[in-house]
Length: 309
Ligand SMILES: [Zn+2]
Ligand SMILES: [Zn+2]
Image (cartoon, rainbow, N blue to C red; front, side):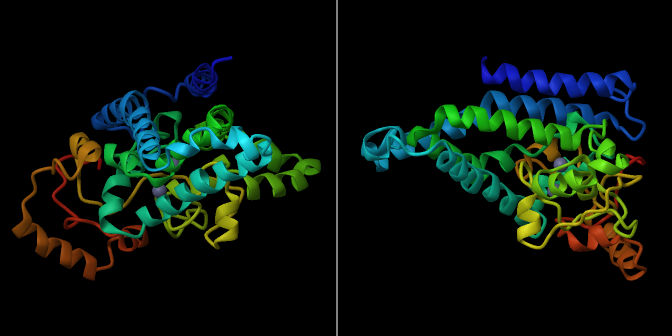
């Protein structure tokens, strides 16, 4: 089976489950920009960015190390274990993406590329690939994946990608597949292993939570994509087996759909002068959430033309 068909099939399965509950196309907290960011962001990733990065990484490798093309499937390394191939992908793709994601919550520039992902005030299959175009274009893990494919991991990568995107889809979906693990006593031990191994709706929802003080939200953690184990290993895991009541980011300046997708090429017009005083005042009054204080924002918080943001 073609791996792209498998990926689309799994996405559609979760999308249909969401639609069945009437929660796919009309979210209660949705604003008009959301659909545009999600549709364009997802299409650009799969039609342009991902093929472009994988191809460019391969072309670079061919230029630098032409003798290693397909090396992991030939010569002395021809019999290298599939487990080694999977380990390489987990480290150079999934672990690198963990660090990229973590860095994106710590630096101003990268956060501006990642904010689109958190701008949606809901969990859904729609937000999985919702990011600024440059977030994926610059993502080291995608470049490493291209290099590994060049070295001969093409088919392993296809299999790995199906598994990885299934987990990520499940972690973002409105349908919380992990709930039955927590509610069934004899599955509790299995739940303990699963939630420390892969991203689940509960742990990833916590990363999208709106209120830093709700006891569930872990905005500065739970960064894992396929493996949640990286969060456990690097000390950023928070497991509650619950789901936040609200999602999104508090206290952020407004950015329209174009800015969310292509910043820094475009910035939403703002009024800096009157705005700065308000922002300073509101920060002094501690009205900005812990989430917003932790993330480094590029503009003062205020001047929101859309009341729902
Ligand atoms: Zn994030
Ligand atoms: Zn997410």
